[in-house]
Amino acid sequence: MSKWIAWLPAVLCLVVIFGFSAQTGSVSNHLSGELTHEIAANTNVMSHTTGRNMIELNLIVRKMAHFALYLSLGMAVMSALAGTGMSRKMAFYAGISICMLSAFSDELHQSFVPGRDARWQDVLIDSTGTAAGMLLYRLSKAVWYYRKK
Image (cartoon, rainbow, N blue to C red; front, side):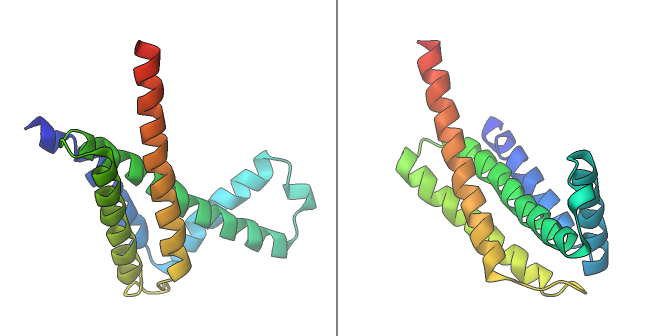
């Protein structure tokens, strides 16, 4: 039973990703626009920001959200795979495969949502976030192991 519970964080990440992907283009743009405005206002960027710069900043916020969500997914999947008895190398390949399949299916899903479209660049960003999350997981485990000694 505990092996199933180990997958709960990964499943929760997938549910969050699916929820964001199911938002229409206008809802998604409104949400990221509000976040972009808050970031600009709280970092004193606002006084130097033109309309064009806000659009560029919004794009960066959106892409960073992709990266962060898939970083979390990569960590969660690696954590779940760690208890399977798989070698580290095999767990890494399985984790990358699971997360990339998720990224592809996420973009396919978005292509059916009004105001959204599928972008291969997002799959690349998602995959990079996944790899970073998986490596961060391995690094944290190594640090934990050596600190414990």
